[in-house]
Length: 400
Image 1: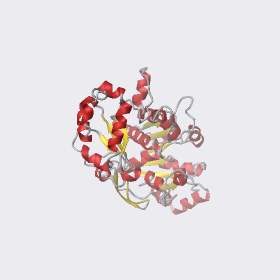
Image 2: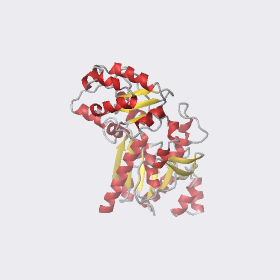
Image 3: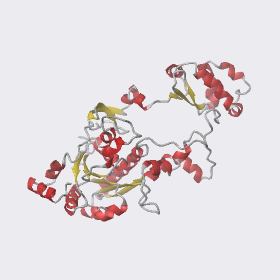
Image 4: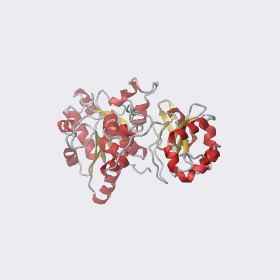
């Protein structure tokens, strides 16, 4: 039996951050019913955008909605909301990210639904939080997580570089883990008190958490400095170098004083130990641009894989900058459980797993994401509707 076997989850979210929290619950055995409008969750169509990967399979939907069952309800209709209310009375968790005014219009606020089921965990996700002047502002991870938090600004390659655009879900995916943590905390409290509760997070709060050390530095009055250009960094030993095969090699030498002599031996540049420009830390920092030029010549002389082998067994923290396509061929990605076998996920045998494991507990084998409304009749029968009642709902357009 899985950890969350018997836990019933209603996913009334759309796109990524909220629904992915429900996905994690499903990984550990929860029964997740995805409630969609008649036109379907907009995330079903996300992969068609021109700046995203071109693929014959709906990869985004496959990842976000594995293990779920799809029930179509047109919640603008009274009959559909009556259906939802019956499901709510038996649910353990409800995940929602509708704007506050839409929740109010549809009667989907926490007080209304929790009055029907005091044990319900009402988990809400918003762009900028539930209160404050921007609570109603529309936000995606590109704006609320990435841009508003300061992350977009701080990761620029230098002060004059244009801001970098995030990848699909770069803020949504980690935010879903935050919402999952809130849900599990509330479930733990329910075990002690018998009562459910309302939990929430926002893309903005998650983004500020991700940028936490820098934001805390600003709170403490620190001077936040942009990166210097790669060719003239503050430290040449925390930098990127282009190898002969066109791949970038990352050095991350935090303990520079300790590691510098060993680095010169690995790279075959021991003569730089006696070079007055680099002999001591202050000189290496003052002459960082010159040291970068030296290291550029060295790394350009061999392939990245060979450099990586030379560092094996040393105390130096290094790595090759992976391309996304490298990840699917990385044995460690499978060994550590980041990629796992799945059943028919987007035409592949594997999918991306939720990013943690529990000793002694087995996750559900990821199954196909549902077609729109695929399980509507099945779910309704489970909750007491017979075929005649289901047909009446269709005549009332409650099911779209």
